[in-house]
Length: 314
Image (cartoon, rainbow, N blue to C red; front, side, top):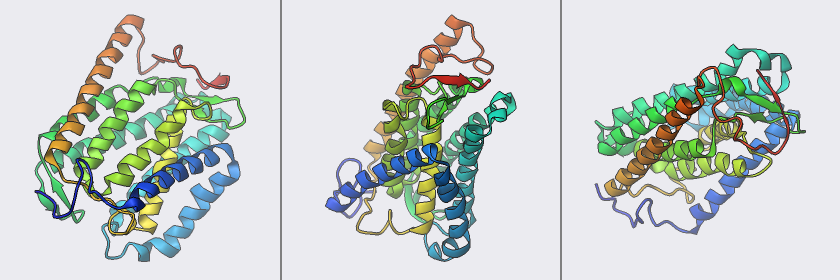
């Protein structure tokens, strides 16, 4: 199970190139998401025109003979794109903000994506070697089951979608108050462990860069409360990059492979499970103390301070 290349605890040692590139990718994804949230022309360009052009001219040829070939990566890309466009509609079509069934769509998409990863973690528990479905080495173990449990806890904490709001500030970003900072950190820990366990040699960018690009903005005024929008947009953009440049993150000078270290896989999953369990216990205590129904009311809306005044969507 030990790789035949120099490694650190989590990843191979590598050269300077992937370390510089992971910073550039993180900044690039976060910036592209902010521009798309702020400007309608960017929505048309990055979420409509570019995906159409890539579909018809580039992707059928760029992925041939690579790990990104086949129908599944395309379906994954368009599911992320559909989620992004559902948020765009909420942002620019005011009448949708009063429809509770429509406000449930972001929560449903988020829950389904988490559930898919949970199922995949359980599948990977039984894989020991090259995964024929993805062409990369996957080592199953107790870490998969621990992380699957963490994902289920994270899914059960999705609440307050009826309180989704649209900011009255110029960016009109979408605010989902119940996706709190502790929940986001719990999600990030779980999702990184999932990528590290199941997509090991893609974890440097699909784990580190992608998660940082949607999490860092929520600590600043321009992104506070808008994690779901940054997550959807950065995931859509990165899926497009992977399809267009399939060799970039796996076998180029910028790639950084996993160390395939069982100790590392155990600890990332253990930390993810422990943190999610703590947040879950607090979440249940919050429900009991406030006597609020997480499916019909916000649990944390009163506690979340946003940079701009918001107009309630429901």
